[in-house]
Structure formats: structure tokens, C-alpha cells
Length: 368
Ligand code: TRP
Image (cartoon, rainbow, N blue to C red; front, side, top):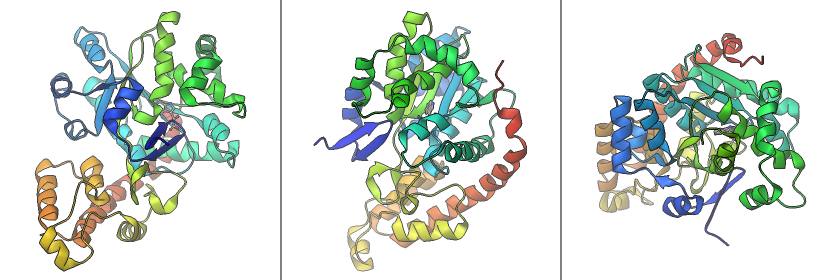
């Protein structure tokens, strides 16, 4: 048994990211590349600084092209298997920053077909409903309506299909089987699916940059292999780590496991209860011990959520780290900080999310 598994449809175990980088054959984001991104963007981003985005494929090439006057466009996506949770927001928030800094067009693919193929208990109606719900969260983050289009696979197949056909013809069954571990029982929708996830990479002529969870990398490894064969740019990628579920290391947040997950639609009370009850703690069993030995922020889920998403201020984050580690701050106090941060973020987000219902039409891609 391997100690961890990372595929687009299954993430399990305590992921060793150095090992994963070697397995996938991606490049680590070096301090030098981090500085270069910040320099070209004109601003640093805490997710880069803290290693939330840790790996890439040809990010350096895309920056170079950009500096030579060739603009890239952005692409990312969402498999609508349930409501949006805070883990999903990580690459989207970063994508929004990239759009602002580089003035890039953005395509957001919602794969209602994929989740129908991969989840035996979901109907196409279920995934179509979640597609629209998930789109609201995406729009709520403030993407520029002039530069952003949402592609829904079953609706926009007319645009996607001719591109997918070019791709599908150049990927053979042995390639997909080796990449994803398909067997004789795998339905053929899944086998073709990579061609559809690849299609938006070529929706414009220029180079594309894809911010994404590292679990999605295998699709684009195949896309990159075939890109030269269809005389296109290889897609460049920038990968974020998987966001742990509330119950701690050993998996990512899953949209279908409600006690392990915080949804963007949770009420303040639900957030409070879930964090207090389920968030894995790096603290000691009792207060006296905690004061004496201190807590371990590196394994504490509440601290990790602050680091990954909810506390962009480095100074504040550092003092939380120090106080928790020394035992000055108790687990309950740390959880309280996170609860307040999430709820204040949600207060704004949920309002924008509702407003997005009227804007959705503006964002949907129109087939020509
Ligand atoms: N397969 C992805 C998921 O399950 C959705 C997706 C489609 C995606 N296109 C993408 C994710 C591009 C990242 C980048 O969530």
C-alpha cells in the first residue's frame, strides 16, 4: 500500500509533496521563481509566500512570454458534485488575483458530465443544479464580467466538441489507463473525459495558465504531451496543495462529507459548531499540559486554515503561531479566531453570492 494517493477522483493519506512532485514530474516553485512572479505581477501573494502554491509546469515560460508582450489567458474549473466548500476557493481566489494583476481573460469550466460519470449516485439533473450553485461562488469572488466566461460542459458542448475531438484522436487507451488507473469496468464517459477537460486550454490561440489543485495535474500532463501534435502551446500550470478536511491530515476536504467540510453556504452557527466539534487540534489534552508544553500549529487544522486562506496578514499569523506554540494561546481561543474570520468572510461572500444570481447570464459562455 502506498502511504498516499492523489488522482483527480481520489485523494487519500498524508501527502508527501516532495514525493508527489517527483511522481508527477512537476517543478517546485523555487524562491527565485516566487520572486519573479511577484516582480512581474507588481505584488506578492501570501499563498505563494506560504507555499500554498508549491509547484508548477512552465510558469517561468508564461512569465517570459508575458514580458515579451504575449498575453496569456487563465483557465480553471470545478466538478459540481456538491456545494462549494472553502477548499475550492483557494485556486479561485488566486486566479482572481492573477486576472487582476495580468489583465487576463478567464475561462471557468464546470464539468457536470464528469461528475455524472464519476459518481454512481448522481443524476445529470443533480450535477446541473450544483453547476449553477457553484457558479455563484465563483462569480461572488469578483471576476471581471468582461473578461470571464463560465463554460458548462453539457451546455457548451458545441464549442468544446471540435476541440475535444482533436485531442481525443491523439490520446490512446494505454495512455489514459496508465495515467488514471482505468480498468475494464470503467465507463467510457470517463475514458473520453480528459479530452473535454483539455478543450478549454485551446479555446483561445495564445498561451494558457491554469491555477489548480495538484490532483488535477494528470489530465494536463496528457494535454501537454499532445499539444505540439496539434500545433498548440502546452498549457502552463501552477498547483496548490490539497486543503485538509476538518478532521485533519489524511485527505482533502470532500464536497460530499458534511462534518469534515465547511460549505460557503453554512450559517455562522454551523461554522462555529463544526470548528469547535470537528477541527483537528494540535493542542494538549488539558489546559495545564497545554500551558506547559504548548500546541503544535503545524498539525492544527484551525491554524492551517488561517495560514492557507483566512489570515493574509503575516504579522498576525506569526503571533498566533508563536502564542499557540508556547502555550499562551489555548485551542479554544485559536478556534474562536478562525470562527470569526470565516464568519466575517462569509457575511460578505454570501451577500455577493446572492447578488450573483442576477449576473450569471452575463458570465455564461455563448456558443457560436
Ligand atoms: N475536474 C475538476 C474537478 O473535479 C474540474 C475541472 C475542469 C478543473 N477543468 C479544470 C479543475 C481545470 C482545474 C482546472 O474539480
